[in-house]
Length: 327
Ligand code: UDP
Image (cartoon, rainbow, N blue to C red; front, side):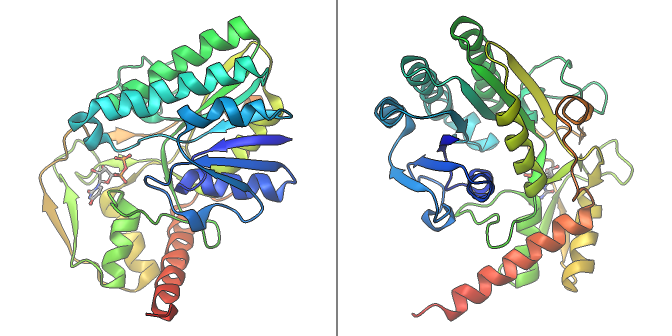
């Protein structure tokens, strides 16, 4: 297939674009490099630098596209609370421009990168796709609103679309992993402590109603996540918008993640309890039964040890590369 992949300089987008290239697809990337890394875009892809909202119409207007995989988005919860306008424009307005360009150019196959933040605070876990959606921050609200837009475009214009609601994506795929300028995610932050780039990790709250008092999340390996995108692209049904959760179905507490990182890295990783982070739910665990039964998704890297080991291998390689680069 000839595919437009937006946001393929980011962590999730770059791994998915690499896997799409490996499967023989022709990949055209649009990315404005606002948060991504140019180096993460697979060498086999054609890269067009700029904003999706400005470029989608002309790029899809070239013709020959069979589908779109849409990752380009702002994705920091805290930032979305402080600067909602950047999220509504960057996520919602951008996606509307992309959908318009798809309709105008009769491209009717879409996979959309969505999030568990569309659900908000869950009443029970595991979370299934029919849970109430009540996002607790503008980031989740933009992603949920985009789902409504996709549904109506799909039905009106015959687009086959899938939204994949990710839980906590982690791990690495070879030399592609989490390498953000501003890092807020737990595993890469802990690994920065192991590298000696940070003194300690802060545990955001140890008074949650969980097994050890720290928050519990469902970590999914980036490579398993990428496979789900391939399955979705290959099975989209014209005029239908499907929504699937993507997680491993297991919950690990912050303390358990730190302990696993200590084991894998051999570093003591000092930790200090800090206040809870605003907007954090106590527990987020996915039910991925729907995508397993409907699309035959079969994640093979679900244990935390593999996820942390792959992330650590990537982090060390990145450090070695930085050390060997000419100064
Ligand atoms: N967390 C933490 N210390 C950190 C970063 C994260 O205790 O320095 C906690 C955070 O409060 C949440 C979990 O780790 O309970 C996972 O956070 P992350 O930012 O990785 O993903 P999120 O669940 O927010 O999408």
